[in-house]
Image 1: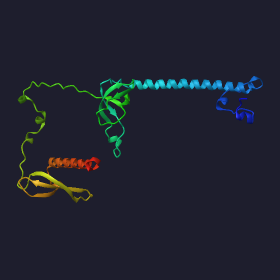
Image 2: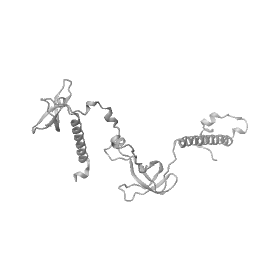
Image 3: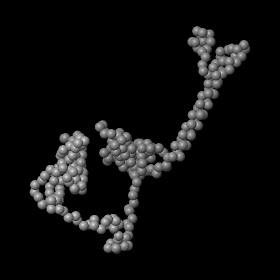
Image 4: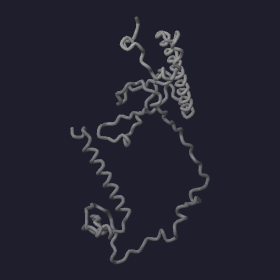
Length: 252
């Protein structure tokens, strides 16, 4: 009979949202037939699906057009050197601080208009060579920089930095009888604390013309350049030691 179980049990078809939005029609004549009513519902249902499909196609076309307006045409072709974007990082590293552009690789083949095949042979990377073109960016090739021909003789050139300095900036300051010049900074340690709880540093100083070294509070030193060089060198050594300790190959 090709009837639904609901119709066989209740004697009428279940009302849907589509039926509620349509007119009931004349139930005293042919509209009372279930087959005719179902055909009427199915016709409106197909019409609604067709309208939804058309609206979806229009929305896709509008988004594609808006996207293409902001995208610049790439110049990637066979033989071009490119960088490859990989957002996978080693465990323990922060993704936002990791280096995510790898390579450069050379394009071996244009698989399609949106995919290329890279040359990965001979590189330390083990990956699938076919990648999407959105993951690539061309390697900038910088030509030879032009040499600037200075026609002014060196002795006649004006040093603007030197001219802006005061006249007495080149004159060495005369040291007093109780002032000793610092030759080098050798070590650092935590010293006394201020009334606000801040710990001051003490530096192991080697004095010029003396053999003995002494610990001096940072507030009593007037050698900012030597202190800056020492702190920078000390930070570099600490970072290098941390990298060696975290490298599994160094333990082997």
